[in-house]
Amino acid sequence: MSAFEAEVKKGERFEFGKNWRGFLSTLTDERVIIAEASIKEMMRVDDLTGKTVLDIGSGSGLFSLAARNLGARVYSFDYDPASVACTWELRSRYFPDDPHWVVEEGSVLDETFLNSLGSFDVVYSWGGLHHTGNMWSAIANAASLVNGNGSLFIAIYNDQGRRSIFWRKIKNVFCSGALGKTIVSSVFIPCFFLEVMLLCIIKRENVFSGYKRNRGMSIVHDWFDWLGGFPFEVAKVEEVFHFLREKGFCLKSIKTTNGHGNNQFVFVRAAN
Image 1 (cartoon, rainbow, N blue to C red):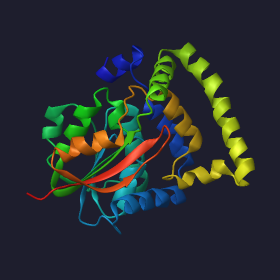
Image 2: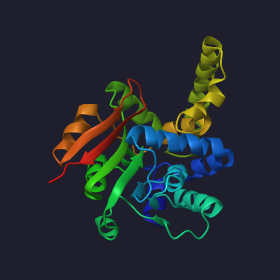
Image 3: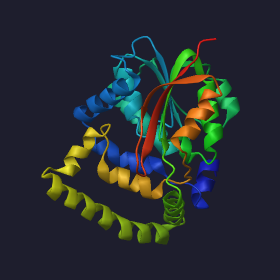
Image 4: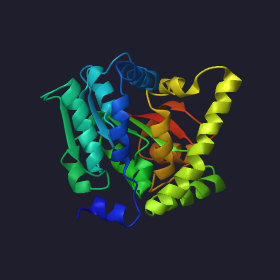
């Protein structure tokens, strides 16, 4: 039994890859274009031609695909074997036998593995580092892979204090077994659905279909990602800023949330 399988069996980890496998059936060219636009907007670039990109926790593989479409040479890895399979699926679908897109299984907490990778122009990890069980080490390890004048693009769950503690307990219950998953899903999925239906009425628009404008993602798959996303850690904006400033990074771009979502950051390694 692998370390990943052991953690899942003990209720210590959500199987993100199984959720992303379902998402791939919803993937369209429009979603891919939206994902590309989200990268360009945050990084303030028109493309990534000639850049090397490391996608840590590649998940569905969507953003590795977006980076490759933007001209980057991409290295993707994930700790979850099913997520690795999803990324392989997208590589096979869009860039078969492409030598400029490498997909592997690995952990951002495995320094031996990381030392074999070298450094990259862009290190990208959207919503993965806070699911490692050791978020600050994961952030530090990701930052160490950025080359001189390179960029670090990360998204970290916003610290909401007691609300974050509450959600951590819910996620723990969800991952505790079939009963926990059933209880949490039966309580919260109808609540989420009702909330979106009310928004549809208030905004007079289809919030379900419009959600894909949010980085090309799927609202239902994101619901389960949120409920099951364990391990789960959070950070305040200023904590991430100060942590990376001390490691020689300057903040280039930021997008914050007042809710339970992710704060997004693009840092640039300061020139020596």
